[in-house]
Length: 478
Image 1 (cartoon, rainbow, N blue to C red):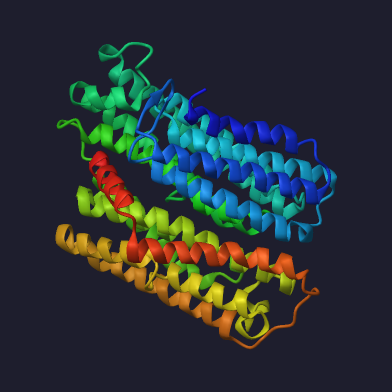
Image 2 (image 1 turned 180 degrees about the vertical axis):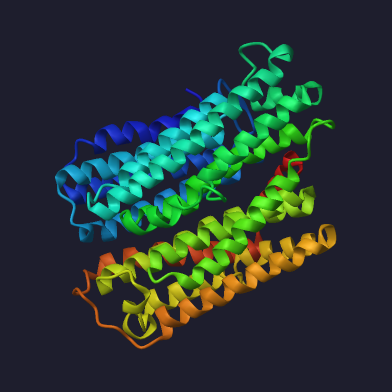
């Protein structure tokens, strides 16, 4: 079996085993082991030449996201092992949570590696259903409401994406066979000869459909609720992984439409949705009292920044967008590790109930402070490099849009710094529970600091091979 398919099926086979393990300690250990296997396979896949195997294909655009997905999947599994006992799961929820987690990871890999529109659509739908079940696993009224909202809005989005997929297939049907009619690579080769009007219609539906999954306006409101009500570790994979897979589908569609000189330019659509998402989220941050919901809105802002970069187009802006997606995955997951652990310690995820973490929990407090600073675009983390590149590209290509973009970024930065001050350096608040065992506390903090270290290393000394791969991916997007 090709490695592309092994990395997809390993989590799914692991999910079957995890569904039969009722003991929390053994289940979390097995979950870490399966996730570690996925990470090892992702590293091996990245070291191999690009290749096509059936419905999958590796290229410069998806390999970096496979690597970051495997890394976040592993660190989130470690964080789960250290903190999941505080979620109060019975043996049925232990089984359901871990099985759904690995179903999601396998679907995530398949969505990233798919060279087939239909397979990607199915993979994103599987990933969505798995995360919906994890959001609802607490079975509280708020959790059911968040899961239902997630399901309905993303169900609308996935229906729009399905219609866009069918229309894109019809646009290329006269030029391709039934076997290749849904292949991204085959579509790129014939895109210039497809009917431009049909391509335009397909892109609009694909952008709205997958844009819903990516947290872009107008169907974005599921995201903060899902972050706030699901188990603590799920916020990391929602923001760090699912949003990337949806954005990758949008980028594949954009590259096909952009290859047709008579089709409408896809860039302005991405610019409009991206800028609107940035501005709405930046001002909405000031009205959030729940810490996890606050950082859910921050994900909308950052996905808007990435969409804006891809809307500008060109090598510089596309590279900024790719760096931003990778940096956001690392830093936002670190933030949710810190906020989630703080919420467990304080017994509340209200911003007003979490304070003085630097004084009461130094390793957690300083780690969370650095993570929020990195999320605000401060050096030396990867988001600083991506936002600096994005502003430079916007000033050069669309100076009249650079000002509102900068406004949104400054408003969001001010909100993040304000929350950073309250959570980490404000008056200490009392803990609601005794501190866990030393190894559990260390295991909960390790993923946070590991993410920060990697985000800093990639900003200061990114490996040459990864730089070359991202530059090639920026050219693929167009």
